[in-house]
Each structure stands twice: as C-alpha cells, then as structure tokens.
Image (tube, rainbow, N blue to C red; front, top):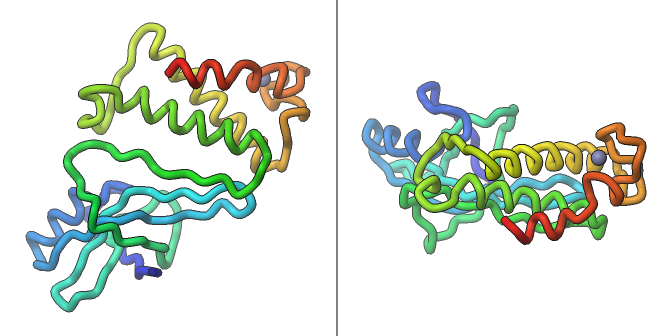
Length: 183
Ligand SMILES: [Zn+2]
C-alpha cells in the first residue's frame, strides 16, 4: 500500500522506531511494522524494515523523515516482524542480470554483517578496529564504485572507475566473491 509521508519535526532521518514510540505516547495509536519498498529502476528492489504509525482513526502514516524528498512510500505490512532493538538487514532483489548488481547486493550484505556482528547489532554507531576495519573500508569503497557503475550502465568489462586503467573484473571486481564469502 502507498502511505502518506508526513514527517514529524522531532524525528531524525531514517530513525523510525524512536519516532513512533514518541508519537504513540503523545497521540495514542499504535506502531505497525513492515517493509518500505524502494525501486532502483532496472537495477534492484530493496525492502527496508520499517515502522509506521497507526493513528487512533486507523490510518497508517509514515512519520519518519528521509534523506531525500518523498510524498508517499510503498509499504508492505508484516505482522510477523517486530523491532527488538536489533538492526534488520534489507532484502534486495536484482532487476537485471548485470553481475555487478549481484556484486553490489553482496557487498551491502557483507557490510551489514560486519556492522552488526554480535553485540554491535544493538548499537546505532559502531567503531571498528584492525583488519576488520580495513576490510570494512575496502568494501565501502567497492560499494561506491559498483554504485557508480550501475548508475552509468557499465559492466564487468568496463574500465574500473577507480582510474587504475584496468577493467573492473581485473581490478575491484577481482576475487570479490571470495572476499565476500570470508565475511
Ligand atoms: Zn578498481
């Protein structure tokens, strides 16, 4: 369903759970869990775990500000989900057979796993150290490169945007699957 987006001034961007708690305390109603769904046309669909507000008049409203302007969101209610203080990974589905789409999704999942390993899942800001921090940083860099390539419609035979002069598959794309499998 499409839901009206009317952000509350006290809410922080993309921080839906504390915002809904305060809204329920001040105005009644209930929290409603589900997935907000984004389409990157021709590239992928992303379902992001999300909470919206069910008003006392039984209207579902999205009150959480985004980092970009939207008037409505596409929302799939999911009564089997609830927020238990832990981050929940998004579900990403490729809309193209460009292998870079799979690389991008694999990198996003790997970054999530590093950031939410063990007790980190309950923290909103994490600090990493040592080899794990280096791997995390390299994955973030490769994530940005693949993002640029998908936006430009490039493939594994295209020049890597890092300006090495090599093809992506011989540069940042090389052995990526093995690296991801190690996370
Ligand atoms: Zn490169």
